[in-house]
Length: 199
Figure 1 (tube, rainbow, N blue to C red):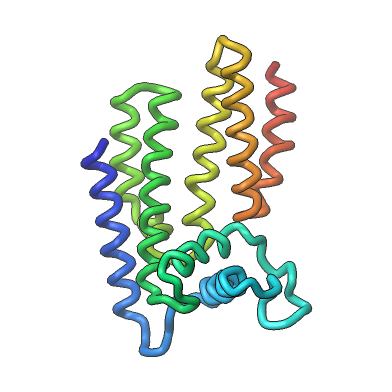
Figure 2: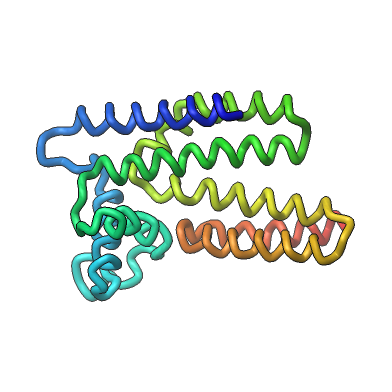
């Protein structure tokens, strides 16, 4: 497990460095979305109104990912740190997603399945790209996986209090995931309806 996690982290850190090194001079991210998240993170760090560019864009983005990004500014005590800090953060978040995939596979199957799933998740190109680009998916994926894992753990508990505890953790993770990617809100009623039909 440790070896897979280490490989996943190194691949994402290396990919982030490679991506940044090939960008034209003066380009921080290569994506306009990343720039908007960065500027919103700066407003959080500075304690300014949460808006992008002007007052008409106060609900332009949900605050989940900008809040996560602002952590590097609080850590460095700088409202405009090197972009490599942001890429390092997304590499760590991408690595957490690999760990989440392994945990989910172990819950549903066994340790061997977890190892195989972890190897695929660590080396899958699209998964690596989520850990190198400064986009909200890097924070959303580990929260989504935590939600699903806690949900499954709740269903697997025979003791009522433990089931409720896992369900509450799943609900909190789901709420945080919605604040990062609002589309996840659509999953909850759909999954709940399917659960009622199956039961």
